[in-house]
Image (cartoon, rainbow, N blue to C red):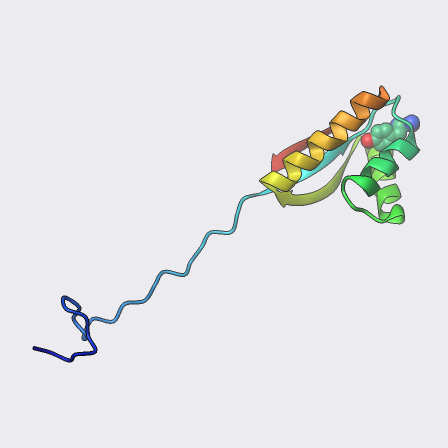
Length: 106
Ligand code: TYC
């Protein structure tokens, strides 16, 4: 019999290495879309409360959408992007505003 420290059926000459390569998860951009009706301060409030932006960053993102039509809010995993977009849309709908956000694969 062989080395007692080697389990039966295992050839100690064969070196194995566990595969440690794990693909990073796909990431998603959240994009804010301008409209003519949602108040600026409501957009800022959503960016602060749902997307955890500080006030000046939230204002910058809002103004970028206001002036250019759309603005990147952030890049997140699928779960974070979709749950935040859902919450933002729900709050806008409840408040009676047509605020639009969408996600796209980054
Ligand atoms: N354009 C809106 C207004 O003038 C403000 C606004 C900015 C709305 C950004 C949506 O994504 C938006 N009241």
